Image (tube, rainbow, N blue to C red; front, side, top):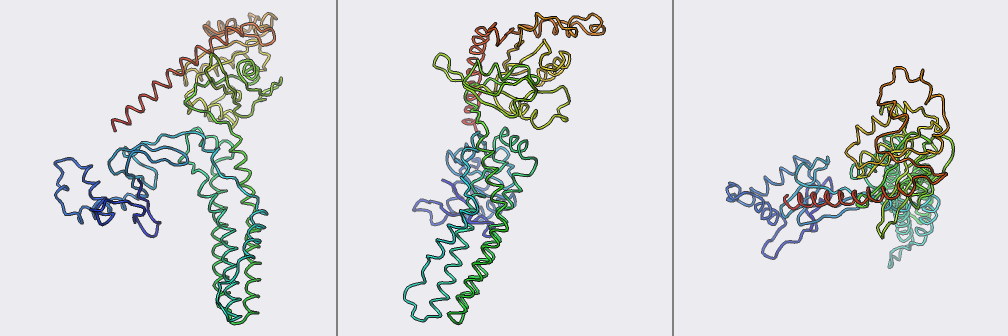
Amino acid sequence: MAWLPSGAAAGPALRGARASPALSSGVAAAVMLYKRALPPSSPLLSARPSATAHRFFCQLLERGASTVYLGRWVHSATCSVSVDDRPHVELTDGSNGDLVQKREMVGAFQRIPMVMPATDILMSAQRKSRNVPPTKGIQNIAKRERNKGAKQLDALMKELSVPLRTYTENFPRRRDLHPYERSLIELTFGEGYYEKVLGRVDALRKKITSVGKQHASVCAKSLTKREAEERLTEGRKELEEVFQRGQNAIEDLINVAKALRSMPVVDPHIPTLCLVGSPNVGKSSLVRILSTGKPEVCSYPFTTRGILMGHIVSNHERFQVTDTPGLLTRHDDDRNNIERLTLAVLSYMPIAVLYVHDLSEDCGTKVADQYITYKHIKERFGDRLWIDVVSKCDLLDRATPSRFDNAADDGVDDELRRYREFGPEDAIRVSVQSQTGTQELKQRVHHLLTSQRARIKADTGDDEAVSEVR
């Protein structure tokens, strides 16, 4: 059960509250539940109900309360909220403190509404509004015509504005999204663009509502039939012009919706293998032999420009595989948005890492640079389950000057020298072309993802235990 405010202007008025027959008002019910949350020694237990209620709701107003939750579970489009039997408050600024524990879930992009093209919205609104008849029983011609005009203008206004309200209310707010999805929005559209597009759509809705109400009111005051018809025509024209001037916002929202729906969904409850490495080291080729994913495989860097998903089915178990864009050797602040997609997956999703190395330098990145990037990622995300793979091992038999020139090794530490020759410790050598090491890789990956499943279950159990304690 949830008590929701009727609106910002009305304050924290309760609606939809269900009280027992013994309680005559929602305030009395709130007081009773509020007292249940107090310790036995609290002086508020003996306070008068009116004083307690006043104090309780004043505290809510001061803290900017938007919702009072009662019960066990409150479900929204983007997350599930776990609460206990005491009254809880969700603050409008999102700072819930320890009162409410949110379980952020991915997949909000697949639940966003379909956005109709602006021309379709306008044509539908025009057709429906013209079919609105006057109120029955009006004998006077002038009164009947002005009644019809006001009703048709009101209908046109609503048919244009209601879809826009639906979009702004049902597109997820970025603050309610999983951190991974928040980062995808920022990296795909740029900082603030998503909110800007929704703001433009909402501004168009408000403008249509204002113009529609104004013209409907003017039409309702017409003195003659002719005057009512003229004001109806004028109102229709201006409403349609306002909508057409702002239709670019709707088209932009359509493009945003298409981009969001095309983004891959990574289920955090399914073990996921994330392939990481420098550009063109062979990550996409490994995804093809490990999973159902069919990423593009080319001989130039940054073939993968987004997060690509595949699945592994092994021993009747299902796992996920993600192919990520390559990482260059530079500071995180200097990375482009394509590289930051990789960091977003590593930072926010419970994944196991398959790090790919190309010691042949066929990828175009020097071994020394690959080593620097590898050490940085390993230090930052070393708590993840991990497999190292040396790809293109069939090319390592071909001597290259950068690997075997003794002069080039002057000043190189032993660790880097060992990395040049053998790669990281316990790395698997694989060649997709000759199928060398592929079976061993598949076995290691299955073992790794099985361990990842156990880790996910353990983390989920810990979260549920914390929830029960709270």
